[in-house]
Length: 251
Image (cartoon, rainbow, N blue to C red; front, side):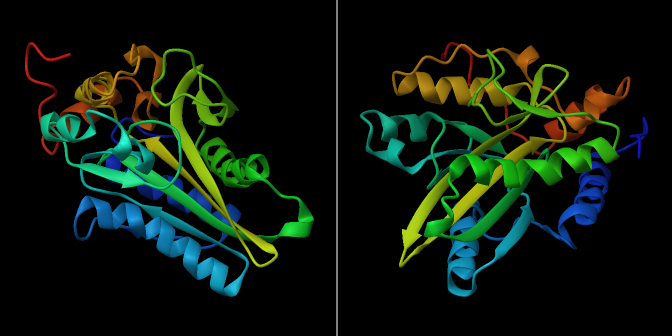
C-alpha cells in the first residue's frame, strides 16, 4: 500500500492504523480529549487495566501540541522556569528518555503487556514486541523501517524506528513488577508530518535544564516525506495548529 501525493496527515494515520490492525487486531484512534496531561496519563491507565486482567493491549492515540518529558525531570533545578518559558504546554510521563513532541502531526502507539516474572521477559523484548507490528505495518505501506540509533536526533535510543537513516519514531518504556508478574509499558511517537519549530522547543527546554541539545532536523523524517512535495504540504497543514517556536534571542 504505497502513499499517494495527496495523502493528508489524517489519511496517513488511518492508513497506518489499517495496516497495523492486520498484525495486532482491530485498533481505533483515540483523539485528544481533556488536557494534554490526561492524554499522557492514559498510558498508565492502560497498564493498570492489563495488570488487572493479564495479556496485552494496544492504544493508538493523538494529543494536542505539547512537549512531553520524563516525570523525574520535574525535580531538576530550573524545571519550573523551563516550563514557564516553553511555548508549548508541558506534560510528564512515567517512562525515561528525554523530551518529545506530541501533536496533530504525531501518532502515538502504546503497548501494555503483563508477563510472568518467571518468563524473564524484559524491556528489550518489550520494545521488540512493540516495534515488530509497527515495522510490518510500515512495510505494508511501502516504508521500510528498522530499529537503530540516529546520531543527531532528539531523544535518540537503540529502539528508534528508522527509515532511510532518519528517525521516524522514538520509543520509551518502563517495567512495573507486582506479585510474580511484570507490567511492561512501551510507547512510540511516530511523525506523520514535520514542524520545524518542534526541535527548537525541545532544545530550548533541555538547554534550560543544562542538557546538551544539539539536534539536527535532517536526522528526522516523517511518513509524509515519502512522496515528493508531500512534506511541505504536511508542514503547512500542521503549522495552523502549532504555536511559533522559541522567541528570537532565546536558546
